[in-house]
Length: 510
Image (cartoon, rainbow, N blue to C red):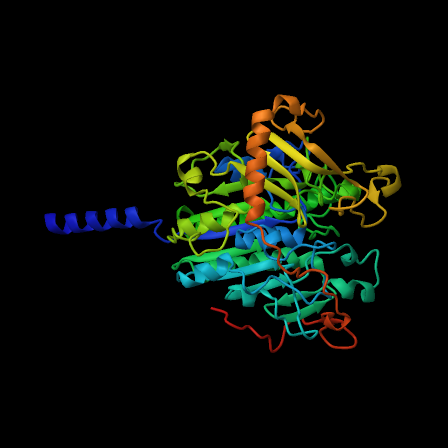
């Protein structure tokens, strides 16, 4: 009896010691949600939801930066751990359009590809926005299956768009940019958005249940809160904050469903979940554009409101609950963090420059940020650098928004984005750099005298020189427009709605 008891105890100890040998990972990426949009980040009228509860049960970050302030480059940076300037995600357009022949280069290695090599099941649903077709209207050469995702459920290769509002646009206008896929096959054009979140949640839950007994990585870039705003009957008209608040609540519900599934399957203690916004809010959309809180600027800009985003880490039993972390970190860090936690400790020794660093010790042990400097870009132009409590601007963008011209009764007249330019008349150069203490002055209203920062500026310039020496220009993959690449389910009509999709090509689905 003693020997049996000892054997069981030894086995339990072994299991306990190795429960995190191959942890699961879920990365949930919000779209266009601002730093001030959640109750847990200070919004006075937004209802509390599962995302806020997630913050109470995990770590809420206050100095998390996106790698870029628009959709395409921020997503490329998240999945590769590399600044967009290194991988061709630069150019005047700054994002991929549905007619572009370019996409995330296959020479780049994604988190999904790395984890596949480590024996992980990989899957995703939601917004891709890293390329669609390359040579024909339906070749799908840039879709997620070509970047390490073995399962791809309900997905939106281009994403959400202003034209996806059936109250404002015709079916023909909507079809151009609003379409839904299952893996590599289009199943709806234009999209009917009301049930989209529920569909993605169901796919996510099914994937997690199917792979609950093996390590998995699941990427869930949601459509909220990009325009055009939409919601299901369960959430429409329920928020005190209006339609934007409805969107936040539905997104929060989706996050909660994922967390509840992990708990139900009793794998929550072996799963790291990250919730992050891709960049700041589109302020030009009036009450439908979100809030950057105290920060100046929004989507498209390198001001704090464009790049500083809400981010929450959740891993019951491994990372502490109810912690507010003020370390300077970045979405670039997700790649190296996940790979280290998955057991690949030499992820950055392949000769490829990774701008992100592992946050494993920060998450588990409360260690300081591994970053001395964060280099903040607009396309291929280094605009600013974050160092300690200070932000140094070499270039700034005009931050004025005329709400009287853009809004009627709080509603946007059109899809306007003020901060698109990285060069040109609305960009101002600063030599010496414009300096803000963003701890004391988070709104970046009171520039400091460079005369008081001589030593720090010398250190800054040395770091910038070293950084720039590591950045080698590569060919841009943006702006390669080709009309023949318009995604279309049944040319030349380009309209379809397959409620029960037939003959779906589910390549490499586990």
